[in-house]
Structure formats: structure tokens, C-alpha cells
Length: 273
Ligand SMILES: Cc1cc2nc3c(=O)[nH]c(=O)nc-3n(C[C@H](O)[C@H](O)[C@H](O)COP(=O)(O)O)c2cc1C
Image (cartoon, rainbow, N blue to C red; front, side):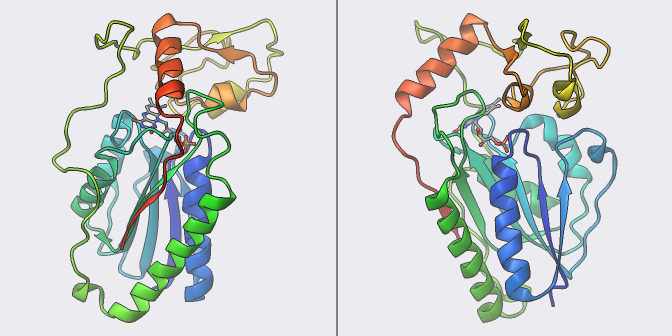
């Protein structure tokens, strides 16, 4: 019997949070049980080991980075103890493609001792852009999210004991193919890993950027300084109240522009039950 529904996610620009919390909310209401949240976006939370048990249903969300689960999360995900809890792997991607991210997340959660019962890939505004997937997940997406949660509830009621569930087949491959690689104008692979955001004169020193950086990489003493890596998650840029953070590296801007041009069509969610 499910006693608790947990929304657990990494979500620097809040799109994964929105989808994951909605699924958890609908399921907790239907199952008439407790609901709680484990938001592991900030580094302090990832220092604690999370342990679950068979009474838990965990809606586990990550964004798609380069067609995969963000590689900076792998070490942390391996510390989680599923304890036979049911899980719903959820990935949110920026209107390009989720490639192998969902298959990878499902496999990782299985290795942690979770039993995946359903999985979904949804669309969120792209971390690099204000126009690619703008405003998504929007109302249309959220209606799909709620229907998906309702269908998971029906599956749980119909199929009875978790041991009787059929193994879940999701889109993508595992073992995963390579990471998606940005390219330059000539089609050659470019490495944007070292690119970091700049800060304009508009900055009024509120330090929100330092507080929201999921890598804890922006110095509180001088927010123009980096003390660690930048994963280009967009958190400092999209959460800056005066829009003072920006990227100016040619490689990043070209990649952003190319994505906006090439993936302008509306991608749709993929659901697996
Ligand atoms: C480094 C990086 C790589 C990304 N790679 C992809 C990708 O391969 N495909 C895609 O559609 N979106 C990609 N995105 C966009 C995010 O998956 C998308 O914007 C997601 O909604 C962000 O989730 P969040 O709001 O929870 O941070 C990438 C974003 C970042 C920061």
C-alpha cells in the first residue's frame, strides 16, 4: 500500500519542478496519502542520503542535458536508496529531443532499488533560450501531465501487486549512446563546457545568482567570480531580477541560435505506462 508520494527533482529553471510536483499532487490526492518534496537542485541537499521504502511512490524528475541525465547528478543519484519503492522517472527537455535520457534515468533508478511503474518525457522552455519552448510546460502540457498522473493511478489500482507489473519499455537506448554535441558553423563539434556567464552593469548586488547556482559556483563575495564549474543550467540568468547575467561566447550564442532555428516546431510529450 502506498503511504506517501514524493516529488523529487533537480530543476534549475523550475520546469522539471512544475511537471514533477503536478504528477505527485494528482497521485497523492487520488491515493489519499501524504505528499512531500525533495528538491535536490542546490548542492547542500545532495550531501544527504535519501532512503525510501515499499510504501513510497517517488516521482523523480531531471532535465535533459545533451540528450542524457545531467552527468553532474550521476554520483548523487547513485547514493539514493530506493528500498523497493515505486518510481516514475520523468525527464523534461527543451523542445529538441530527450534522446536516451529517460532510458538512462529509468535504469539508474532501477539500479538504486526502485521499481519504475510509468515514465514520461515532457517539454520545458529551453535553459539557453526565451523562445525555444517558450512558456512550456504550458496549459496544454499540464493537461497531459494531469491525465498521465490519472492513468498511473488507474494502473496502480488495476495491476495490483507491484511484482505483477510488466517491465516498462521507454523511448531511447540504454546503455546510452554518446552525449549530444553542439556544432559550429562548419559542422565541427564545439566544446562549450568552459563557457561562463558574464555580469552587466545592471547588477545591483542582490546575490540571488549565488544563492540559486546548483553547483554553488558563484562567489558570494564577488558574484562576477566563479569558484567552481558552470553547467549552463540558466538558473542565474533566468532568476536574475534585473537581467544582469548573460552569455557572450560566440560558440554558446551560435548553438543557441541554431537550436532556436532548427527546433522551432512544437515537440510533444512521450508517455510510457
Ligand atoms: C547543458 C544543457 C543541455 C541541454 N540539452 C538538451 C537536449 O539535449 N535536448 C533538449 O531538448 N533540451 C536540452 N536542454 C534544455 C533543458 O532540458 C530544458 O530547458 C529543461 O526544461 C530545463 O529544466 P529545468 O527548468 O528543470 O532546469 C539542455 C539544457 C542545458 C542546460
